[in-house]
Amino acid sequence: MPPEAAMPAGDPAPPRGTPGSFRLLTARLKRPAPPASEVLHPAEESPPAPQPAPRPDPGEAAAALLDIIWGAVDLPPQERSIAGDTMLLLLPRLAARDVAMLAERVAAMDQPPALLVSRLVRDAQPGIGALLLERSAQLDEADMIAACRDGDPERIRLLARRRVVPPALSDRIVAAGDLLGLLLLLRNHGAQLSFQSFLRLSQMAGEHPGLQAPLALRTDLPLAVALDLLWRLPAELRRVIIARFLSDSLTLTRILAIGQWAGETPVLVGGPHPASVIDDALEPLLAGRGDTTISRIAALSGLAEGTVARIFSDEEGEALVVLLKALGLSRSRFDDALDRIRAATGLVKENRPQEELKAVFDALSFTKARVLLIYWDWFTRRAGPYAEPAEPGLVEAAPLA
Image (cartoon, rainbow, N blue to C red; front, side):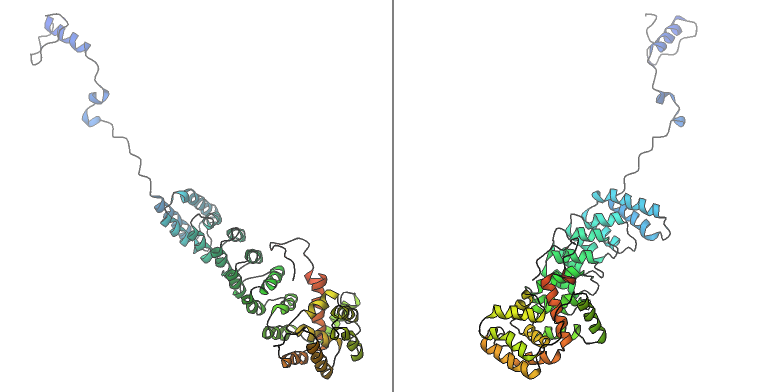
């Protein structure tokens, strides 16, 4: 047997110092070293490496963050911000049902994270943004304006129903032109409308009669808009406007006198005219020469010719009654003049009862009639409240009609 040969398995170890023991030692030295794990005693083996904890479901993580934001009354602002920013990281990973749950809870918060609200309002799912627009009282004005830029009728109507609608948002809703949205806006007592929005709605009321009553009955309707709206209203609503917005007082007389002194209210500065002068001015009208009458009345009253022409275009007849009252006709001479005008011209529609026009004449005073003419003339001249704003607002400029 060669000296390096291993001893057969199962043979007894040879005595020390013999050739056999030498061969056995040589064979053991030539064997490869066992792994360290085999050398250690079982009791001394290293513990297994810890496995990473499974990642939580994004919906559960979002719910946990909401609990922190909602439940911690004394949560410092910076920690609230961190929680909200962390929620933004989770938002793209949330399922649709989890986003809906998140939107519902955020809409009910008194102090929701502003950036999170902004992202949810712009969410690709239409129902998510609509939920915030309808329920959340803590929306930023810029987010609400951005939400209606695409002209989506459903979003516009939700915004028009909000408890508080700031003027800039109302401007956007008016500019969108959705009829149902406009009706909701006008019936909403919490909606704040700018003068330009009111004026635009007055113009639209001529095309959409459904807007007339809600607009005429707005408690915050400006006087200048009301007197412009008068042209587009039926007889019953005209009476409402005249009774509500026109009055007689010493203060009003002083105001008109100041305007006259400043040269800004040149209408009928000399007061009522004699009946003979009025008859002479109306004579060409009865003879079929309306243009001549327009120029004569304009020179007599101080009105722009465009204002007089507009008065003659009112088929309902109230504008003509206002003119005759302001010129100074008495009740008896008014009846005669109105009879002759109706018989010789087609200025007043045939089915308008004469008694209604006489009632309008009786309800007016010279001062009330003059105020109406002044505002109508300002409109024609684009003066006073009807002057174009120096800087255009959010409502698109439209020609005044």
